[in-house]
Every structure is written in C-alpha cells, then in structure tokens.
Length: 76
Image (cartoon, rainbow, N blue to C red; front, side, top):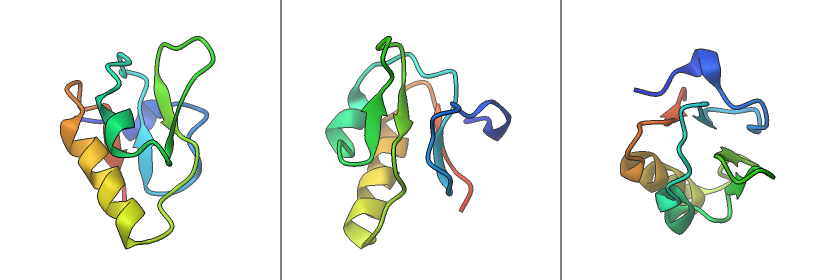
C-alpha cells in the first residue's frame, strides 16, 4: 500500500505520487512515460507532472496498477 507520508520529494504536487519504497522496476514507465521520470541516481521514479486529461489519468492509473511494490498512490 502506498504511503503518502513517505512521498518522494520530487513528485509534482497533486493526487498521484510515488513513495520512497519504489525499487525501480520500470513497469510504470511503460504505462505513463509522459508523467514519470527516473531520479538521477536511477533508484526510483517520481511524477514529474500530474495528468492533464483523461488519457493521461488513465495512464497514471495503469502505472499505479502495475506497480509490484505498491509504491504509487492516488490521493484524489
């Protein structure tokens, strides 16, 4: 279960976030490459921006659903 108390600090403000339990499996990047970015040390990803339309919201939701560590959350 994603933990909003340990959100990655680089996440863009908004409902979708990645917490610090991300293990960098890259599954989410296949679903929402327009929204997620790899941190410089390549140990995790974060939401560089929030979804701006229905298509991007669906992509963010798919990214959440494929996360094996349950590190992606939606507070919206």
